[in-house]
View 1 (cartoon, rainbow, N blue to C red):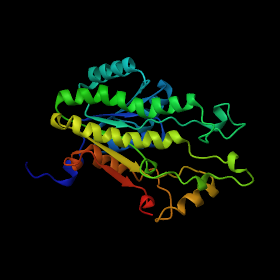
View 2 (cartoon, rainbow, N blue to C red):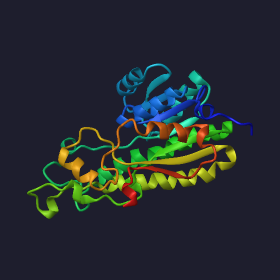
View 3 (tube, rainbow, N blue to C red):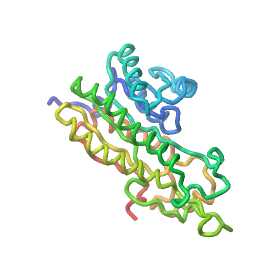
Length: 276
């Protein structure tokens, strides 16, 4: 193998990256990482309005497409559209996740997030989007990359795929024990499952030139409640949450040739939380 410079190894010129949940906070940042390294970002989200708006914000070399990642035929149609426009798919970033809000689910009159009360419908929705969707995207886009002889799959996991949530940071004053909100069980299950999916994919398509790794980020600051932020940062050796731009270079590393000898691994960037 001939010697290459570091900038050359990060260069994504001519490569097409599919990013699920592309209209979300981190989905947009993953797309920026792609385009800033010279690649083309295809942002998938549930509605055309959200996907196209995110792509416009990113600007050049980005495309937004409405896609239901839990629908096999919809994903197949999306792949066909991407191949017709660009002729290739080189990268898949499985970023999409369900994010139910208490006020939106009709359960705000009781602590719905607690395991004892957690609705089966919400369990199914969370698993379907966060884990089954990632599987289907890997099946559709990963198969295309394997057929082409090269590609990269990046699964966005979480520090809570490695450790249990510390439920103390979600506690609210004045509530009884069985009324206290908690981090839902599905978050841990989905993120742990993504790490397992990463390992499986990394060996399954190793001989086809497709690598698979997981990014394991910590919490990103996004104007959360001050009391929550203080409790969470007390669990982090660096004493703060991540800035929303702090994962972009890691994503660029994981989806480019800079990580060409890396597969089946978890890159943990959590301010040290999983060390304590």
